[in-house]
Length: 347
Ligand code: NAD
Ligand code: IPM
Ligand code: MN
Image (tube, rainbow, N blue to C red; front, side, top):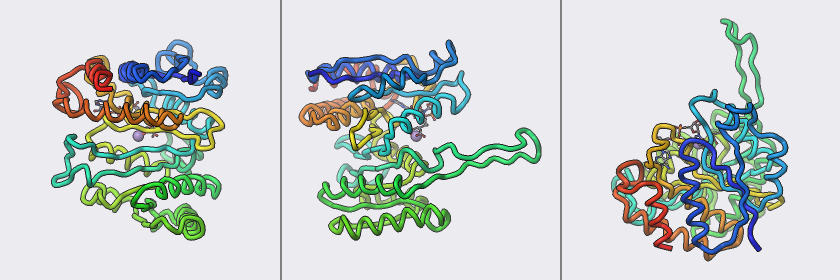
């Protein structure tokens, strides 16, 4: 039976990389019945609509969704990012943002003296709470007395479920090490909830998993100086957003970083998308590296239980990386479409 797959190509380089990812997906032989969704800047600019209820209802009925990127310089910041991308994550309750940070053999890292053995971690980012909740408000906008509040929401339920997922992932890996990243020395209310829940869950239910903690500032240092410290990392929404761009940088760049927005209970679809955005600076040039989107398809296949196809896609993507002159832009030596073709050939 064909999987029901929603496709939100989105803005900028989104459609360019999604086209290649679907080409690779088809070449695996895994059958999908696809529904394209016209969501993003063009729809908004034409109709004023960002994510109508009808589209959301249609999305809820799917097995999975592949998303390219959203965001456009013609649209004010936040309209699409909050109104489309974050709304999808929240409404579908995709509370895990899974972002592997893995340096593949042969891919250059900017870190001197580090290689593929040193950079192999999974970042589990909380994806429905924290500073992303949208709580807060503005008073006296535009006056000297203006006040802007942006509040971080942390619930026991929300924190516990993402920590549990991270413990499960760590428990399934050989090193069995889980590092929580936060800022408990300053964010004492949220930090205390995160730390107590981490320790309680770990001690009572995951005694085999080694627990480690880093403040987020030190974690940034260690990502660069000692990435081998990390096996599974769990952190809140904003810290996870920032850390995973850094993770992308040390593992070969934004053109390679894949992610899944997961509903681990599988009561609805999960959304798979590259970590990168719409990259307006290179859109339309054929310079986008589609590997991040192709590796997101591998994460999707894994999630759907198509383990063998997932491994084939990952291996073909990694083999292709070895043929590129660079990991992004003109330096790749191939266009976006040619990189897609190379992956299909390598399958
Ligand atoms: P970005 O990730 O789009 O780009 C950052 C840099 O990485 C740019 O120099 C870009 O050229 C490069 N880059 C990104 N993806 C690449 C690829 N596949 N191949 C080669 N180079 C690549 O981040 P930004 O410039 O801060 O944001 C642009 C827009 O995208 C904004 O509107 C932002 O809100 C949005 N955004 C969306 C998502 C998403 O849809 N998940 C993620 C991040 C940013
Ligand atoms: C990401 C992006 C999004 C985020 C934005 C576009 C809302 O940066 O997926 O990393 O901050 O989560
Ligand atoms: Mn981001």
